[in-house]
Length: 250
Image (cartoon, rainbow, N blue to C red; front, side, top):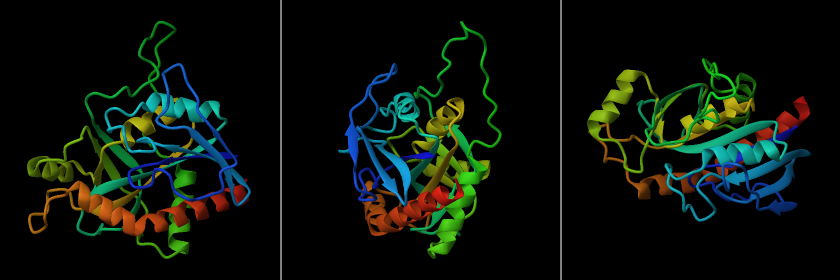
């Protein structure tokens, strides 16, 4: 087993493991967002990739998701765990809470979100009723409970284009649609991992209430960074615990 970890906003270069090797790679889709860092957690091989680059230089729309997934696959990754900051669309999902995602709604407009741009070699329509791997999701949730996190077993994420945040009308619409959290990256990444046949799961940390909650200040980037910064160690502990248990599960 080799686990790819995609670090999202606020967790682009965590001190999760001792780096044994680092490689700058290229793919047929171009360069991934960052070099790949190789090491181990609890005896399990891991490969770390920073979704937005090590300087957070890539906006959500600029991220080369196809290159990122391809680079991990070519590095021999067998499973992917991803992290993301998100806005909560539900009162019960408080700031600093973790959500193990089980569904997504794609509200992006300008992403390369498939490996099958052409059907020249045959039509490909990937089934995706359950886009997040159930085994990995269960491991994330169990690990979160073990270490005492405020963690929700499931949640639907809506991925908006960004980089702007949602209007109040959009935020309220997302709630009506059934979304529980909102972010700017997970949907295209999950689609591509599924097309590449790599089991994929994502855990979101709620940092704000987007803009639907009128008794709260609307979300700001500074607010997101502050909450994620205070809880980054919890995310690292969750990932390390999950990967260690994956190793024992074979």
